[in-house]
Length: 533
Image (cartoon, rainbow, N blue to C red; front, side, top):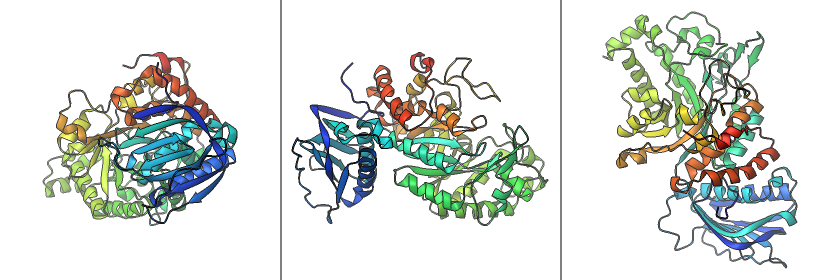
C-alpha cells in the first residue's frame, strides 16, 4: 500500500515532500477577509488544544502581499496564511468555493481558496493531521508537527449530509452541537434536522404556542411523559454555531402526512377534527393535514414564515412521504377541492398540496426539498427530490430536470443494523436489513447506466437516522459512526480513487480521534470484513 495520510475523506491530490515541521510556540495567523472565520477557528484550536499563542494579522486589502513566513530558529512553522488562489492554479479545478490548496513547507502553512468554505475545509484537513489530543487541550506544542506536503482538493458532490430525526426522541442542544463539530471534521456540509412528525413537534412557533405545549410531549411505552422542544433562541444559536463550521442546517416540517403532533395541538387541522393524542409508537398515522380547508394552508404559511426567519438555508424540507389518503377519501372538503381544481383523485390532491406550499416558499425566496413521493406530482422548477425508496425516484427527478439527493434505505439508513451479529442491539419494532460499513463505502450516488446528460442533476447523498428505537445520544452516535466516515469519503473523493483497504487503515486513526471527542461508535468485525453487496 502506498504511503498515505490519515485523512477522511481522502484528498483529491496529495504530494508528500518528505519530512515534517513543528509548530512554533508563537505563530502568526494571516488571513484575508473571506478566510477570517476559518483562521479564527484554527487559531482557537491551536490555542486551546496546544497552548500556542497565535497572533492574528488581517490585511485590509485582499490583494495585499502577505509575504512568506519567517521560520523559527529550528525551522519551525511560524506562520499560517490564508489567501486567494495564486495565478496558475490548475485549470481542471472543479470545486468552486469549496476547493482549497494546502501547502506545508518553508516555515509556513499556506492555505489558498476562493471562498469561505474552501478555507474552512482546509482547516479541517489540518485538524486531522494534528494529534487527536488537540481536541481536548492535551497536545503539546513540541508534538504538533505536520508533514511537508501539498494538497489540492475539492468535493465530488455538493450535497454531503446527515439527517437526524429528533421527533421520535428528543436530543438536547449540547448533543446537536457536538454532532456538528464532528460533521465538519469529515467535511459534511448539511445537517437535515427532522423537527416534526407524528410523535413530536420540536420547534417553538411564536404564533402557535400550543404546538410545543401539547405537540412536543407524549406518553412513552412505560407510560411516563417524555419529550422536549427547541426554543427559537436555541435554534438561532445552533444555526449560528453550524454556520461558523460551514454546515448548513435544513429544517424539515412534515406535511401533509406525519402531522399527528400538530393535529394533537389543533384538531381543526385534520379532516375529522376529532381530538387525538401525540402518537406514542411507530408506524404511519392515518391522520394528516386536511387539504380541503383554507385554514390549513393559512396555518402552514404562518409556520413557514417563522421557519424561514430562523433558518437562512435556501432550501426547506417539506417531507411529503408516506401520506395515507383514507381521510381525504371520506372528507367532503377534500373531495370538493379535488373537483374544484380538477385534480382527478387523492394523488392529484397531494400534488396540489405540494405545489401550493412550493409556490408560497418561492415567494419567500426559498426552494423545497422533499422525499421522493413528491416527484409523483407536477413539481415546479427548483425542487430537490430526496430518493429514499431506492434510486428510481432520483432518476425520475433528474429526467424531469430536478436536482436529486440519492439516499436509499439500502446504503444510507443508519438506523439499520450494522452487522449480522445477533448480539448487536438493533431497532425493536421491525427487523431491518444489515447495512455494513463496507456496504456504505461501496455506494455510488450515480446509478449505473444513467444518461450522461442527467448526471449533473445528482447532487449528492446523506445518511438518515430515524429514532423510533434510538433514545439516547450514546445510541445515536453508535448508529451514526463510523458509517458516516465511509459516506463522507464516498461524497468527497472521486470514485476511482476510493480504496477499501486503505480506508480501513485510515479509519483506525480516525477512531482514536472519536475516542478523544467522546463520540460513541460501533466497531464490529463485520463492519470491516463483510463484503458490501
